[in-house]
Image (cartoon, rainbow, N blue to C red; front, top):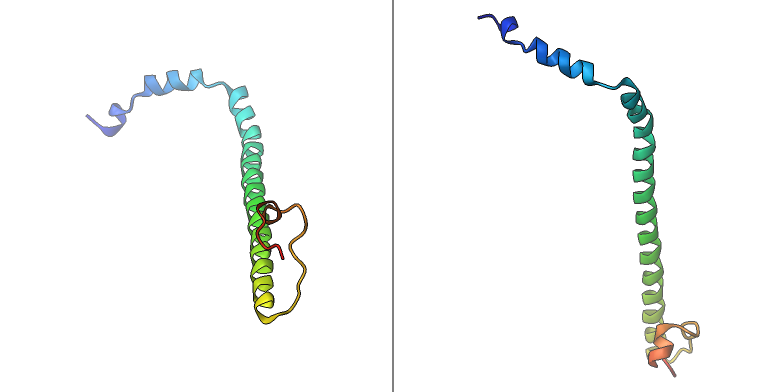
Length: 93
């Protein structure tokens, strides 16, 4: 038996007849939009995470600089009113 004789031609033909060209075309057209939406989501999530990280790092730097300045006897402004430290009484003079 040759290799060609072992190929399931009838099954392949049946599967080919069941293919819907319109659906394939819609999937090919829609796929880039799906990928674009997925990428934009992760860029936005990553960007927001980065912005939040930077904001928290700035706050920690501000508080450390303030502690250092107080140890040297230099007056420095406190973190803006309404922050969590103000509500807990942390960093008050």
